[in-house]
Amino acid sequence: MSRHDRIPAFDIEIVDTAERYRCPAEESLLHAMERLGRRGIPAGCRGGGCGVCKVEIVAGEVVSARMSRAHVDDAERAAGRVLACRSYPRSNVSLRVVGAMRKGFTRHGPR
Image 1 (cartoon, rainbow, N blue to C red):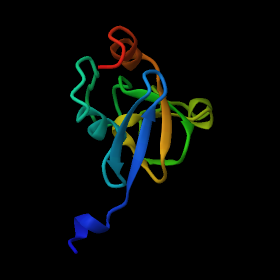
Image 2: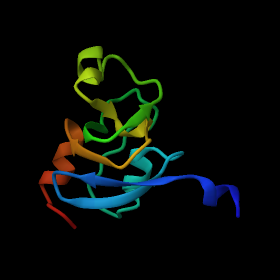
Image 3: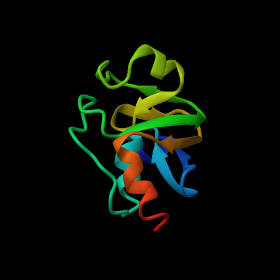
C-alpha cells in the first residue's frame, strides 16, 4: 500500500449544480474542483490573496490555510465562507459558490 492509498478522500457536492467530485484531504477544494473539466471556474492567485474562489460550506468540515482578511473576514469565516484554494476537506462537504466564482456556475448550469 502506497502513502497515496492511505490519504482519505471525501465527496464534495456543489449545491448550486448538484455536481459531485472527490477531493483528497491533502488537496484544496479548488484544485480538485478543476478536475471536473468545467469551463468558467475562476481561479486567481491560488494563494488566498485574491478572493475569487470564495465558497460557503453548507455542510461538512474543512481546514483552511491562511487567507486574506480583505476577502474573508472573521464574520464570513464564522458563517462558513472560505476560499476554495486554501481549504481542505476533513469530511464529506456540501458547498455553495459565492462571489466571482458564482458566475461560472450559474451561467452555464451543470456540464
